[in-house]
Image (cartoon, rainbow, N blue to C red):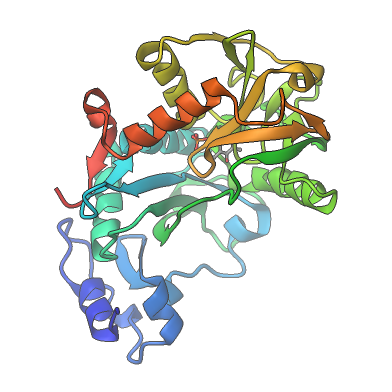
Length: 339
Ligand SMILES: Cc1ncc(COP(=O)(O)O)c(C=O)c1O
């Protein structure tokens, strides 16, 4: 059981980066919810969660100006080590996003990665964890302006087991189209674009589905609200390229590598039409949150016979082995928190 004192001492202990200490931001009395939530990084300071705040005037809030990452750490089989999965790739994508969106990070890829590992240590993370680095345009002035000078950077974490709490899901094709890359750079994980995801999710839930797949304005398969799409037809895996207005996915790229190099499966990257989803033998979604999530039906049409297919199972298993550190030649994708 965590104690207030223990949390306070973690939040105030000197950092290996020598950031200013946020003693003035640490409340004298600890609220119960603060104990449950933990320590957050904000602009060079380590603070209790309740002090990691932005103004209601912030452009980030008013106009959705910012971008973020979503990273997972997995508790290893020994129950002691936590492996952060593809930390470099995630921070690199965040840095690319910031470049596109005129945001400034508090350092290079190595330094931002160090902040994330420090975050996990300060929170004494010894469980499966989700990490959220977030870059914001934090000026309180009026008008949606992209200005590097007002960049803020935040990182927080939370325990996470399953993001989609089902073994196989029923999805629909959303009536909402995926926001086009020429309207909003979809590969940058921009905060504002998640209104598009949220509308699709809400629509899906209201109609009794677990998740939605969005099409591009051209009517081709783009992605789920926070997942990429793979189908299997006649033993071959297919997934649409990131130029179909989807995020440049790290799980997707991982699975393509695992399919080809570790499992000897055939993979082709190409556009996918809506009705191909209805006639695919297998279909699954993937993402940092969703991991590998089999799809049972699309628009109430069963995928294959409705059971989880053999290729999906193999990919799921290999991915699970990799993230838990059981695959020696993939250990360089893992950053140990405690080792
Ligand atoms: C819109 C969107 N698509 C796809 C993904 C999956 O991408 P990744 O595998 O990099 O987490 C995410 C999740 O981060 C997402 O938000």
